[in-house]
Image: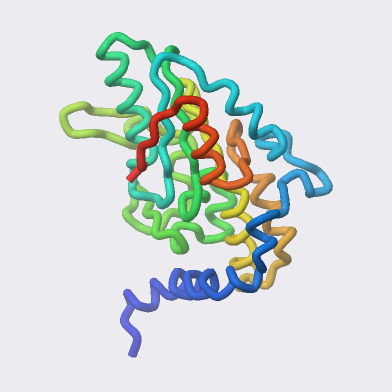
Length: 234
């Protein structure tokens, strides 16, 4: 008999299996020319993929860095940008004089979406992201709009590492369109949904200020071309 732990991991195992076999079914064209966000009948104003290059023009300042978020990695994709800002401030450079970019790609793309999307598509199970408040697979985006006191660091206390809080400090977030395309093509058949409807739903559920980019690796390259140092967010 299958154990409880094995039963609980089934959605993730099924997804990973489907993702592995489903990538080939998309064809190489899905990677070379992934369907852009603007192909939807009603493009989302926030994060229009055709605005991605211009979005990177705002990267300025004395110290510039890009964080590569490929997986949930607990709090690290959000803690490191705050640490970068705090320690620069402590050494004489205010946060306004820094540029920080976080690239959400691969299994980290769910963090670009609102709570409704997390609950509907069970992203907590799929990408193994636990809710810090419960220790169970998240049914919400824990970093979208956290409450005061949700995140504490020993010896430091409360830390403002919510996406909205980091954005208020000038941190820029973008999300990989290729990863969204691949994941939508993988999840939609498992949920008996249409791929285009899933992709459109995700775009409609983007958090404010999240920029869609052609791919995460494209964004990492653009950020480094603008002078950003690379840091793996894990």
